[in-house]
Amino acid sequence: MQKPIGIFDSGIGGTSIWREINTLLPDENTIYLADSFNAPYGEKPREKIIEFCIKNTELLIEKGCKLIVVACNTATTNAIDILRNKFDIPFIGIEPAIKPAAINSTTNSVGILATKGTLSSSLFAKTSEEFAWNVKITEQEGTGLVTLIESGKLHSDEMTNLLHNYLNPMLDKNIDYLVLGCSHYPYLVPQIKEILGYDVTIIDSGLAVAKQTKAIAEKFELLNNTKTTNSHQFYTNTDVAVIKQILKDMHNYVQISHLNF
Ligand code: DGL
Image (cartoon, rainbow, N blue to C red; front, side, top):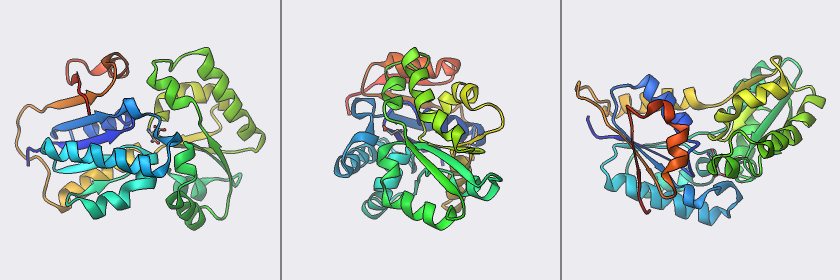
């Protein structure tokens, strides 16, 4: 089916998930919404997060999407059940990959960096209780990180300082895995590696989400089997410059526009 896969995030971070989906499913058309105007979701009350998710979903459905990827941990952990009940379309969500970290940790000490909204969600509490009861988990809210990325300050002294503040205590706790529980954070991996060194394995959920997207598309017979030139539309409700910068290696391949939503 040629209809696009819809993807949304509170901003530009979910483009890290879009990259994984596009690599695994290169024949698919996609539409991406960056709700940067309302970022960071992670600092907002749950009712607001739900309201934003409904608005984004309605727009993607209006644009003809056949399934929706909620490329935001904060949105998934707070709103995906509500979206699934309200809309008659398959949803794929993203959650922190706490299970593989807990299974593979040999120091029995795992760090997780995520937003306040994700760490305080009942879905995250349930997942940690179920899959990570046997390891010590150091939770760290990444307050400020999304805002810096959204303002084009991925590489800045402010970012370096925040990362040191958040990650140094994890080194003291001898973590051997760091779980990135926010789709913005994969863009920070080189900087995080500089701080944590190469003995700590960093994991995120991008590839798992792409595999799940493929599985759901197969199950509902939604894959695009036609060999047409594909289209990748990115919409942001703030300045296009920041998303253009994060997708600078993709300019010949994607279309980026401003849209009020
Ligand atoms: N990319 C979002 C996530 O995965 C960031 C949330 C926010 O806007 O605070 O959680």
